[in-house]
Image 1 (cartoon, rainbow, N blue to C red):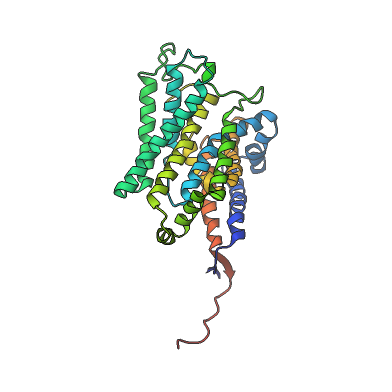
Image 2: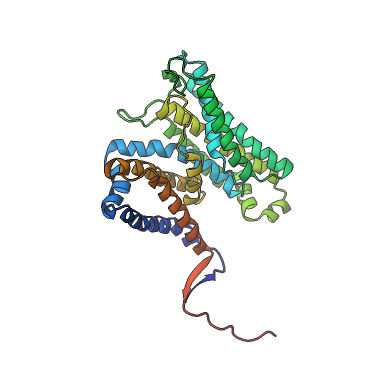
Length: 360
């Protein structure tokens, strides 16, 4: 008989071991999945998880993919710590891309060195404005931010589609739904020659450092932790929950907006009907896999970026479906949530012992 026995307190070891367990179980599941596809499971796993790490160029591509995931993951971690569930980072990324990319389109002939910094600021503002909507609805009317932030994602996607097929469509683009390409001044500088690794990776590093300082060294970081762990105690000592909700959603939205700019001004170079393969949703997994800690988010972002690169490599080398990437991400999240049960429970074998004594 196998049973779960409640722990007297959360296991600190399992908090950090559960992501490793989830990754191992995902790899084991991969053996079964590739076998069902009729592929050699060992070769397929090597192609998916190892081959993308064998060249310098593929390693830089891993960092390119990880950049938006880390930016968004840090922002989401801050909110999740305080039980503020921002599920709409994909929409905030899209609006940040619209704000920053719109500036690049408006000044398409500009060679000013201030264009890119202005785009980054505009992108952050766009993401923050979109994050402000669920913040206002939550604090003013008590509307669940999960629903509002998620549904706003589709509004942002439709807005982007309208712009690139209408007023912002490239006049010389043969009627394709895309904007004109950005000028040199509106592009992220490449930081490693013969690669696509760009300045957005430096922004992600700054976000990690800032998030670490915020969560570990500041008063507001302490308040966020207390509100998340003990809301009643937070109210008792005078912490204002509504201010923390606003702060969490604005920071998360701002970093997602910067991630949007890093994409359109980095590897894409223009606005398209879709500027993200789902980074905003994948970053939710990144945040939890990284244990809601900025440093952990870096490693989790690299792991999830590997699923994108590995999925593309597997499609080319062994002909797996494109959906394999999303499948592995979903399986990893499933096993992560399942493994987290072990932080509060321990596995016991055999029948439980009968309770001793009687009621007095």
